[in-house]
Length: 366
Image (cartoon, rainbow, N blue to C red):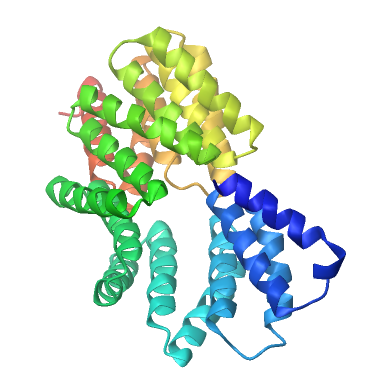
């Protein structure tokens, strides 16, 4: 009932008697900002936390002040304002440590670790980010914070999946899902189901992947997580494409694309272009596929969505090979491999290496 809670808080905050810069207003703004954040309404979340901080800053440091700093920093970072987000995150961590607030430290380490991992381009940077996540998990376990344990496990599971450590990913997702279901954290349940679906897809178990993603879809719809609804629809479309169910794929991808446009989510729109380009490729519509993949590549680079360019480049490179442009094919596939290796995306590396080997063999390089 996040939407109902946010609507109620919005009405309360609009009343004349709550208009002053009081601690009660700051607490209500924190709560409203968090609900908007959970609903992926980042604009609404950001201005509420910014107003809350204007009140907290004239008060003595406290855990609620540190929370507002932490979530604002995470919001700014996820919106590609990485440098702007770094300062409030670091201030939040320092404040939580000074207050002796181990739970606040655990959550801030999680946010910094997750964001650092997302942008790490070196082994050292990646190791430091994972160390922060492991420290966060250890703190949550010591505090017996089941919600925190499940949330951190979800990210560590995704990390293992992208590293190709499938057994570790499965174990972490399973623990995450069991805890989240037990405590009724349906947001984390949905993430775990989606993660397990992605894991099944990597293993080639497409029927299982479809079942898990289909199970997550009504959850994210009920929670009002529209960005995740779009993501799930697009991934279901990819599974249908992989199964040769092109009509079903068209329906799912079109719905995911329309929602991505409606909520003005540039990352999801880039994903939609990629998946629709992939679908057009399998439909034999090469020019349409190329146009969509190039648009996805351009948009992803513009917004700093690093995970998409290597995927678009990989398929564009293979299409260039099929068109007889060996030089262009090898250049794009090589660039894709460099980007994937930088981000330790081993699963996608294998696929792109196979394409590169095929293009190289066709050019007589073997």
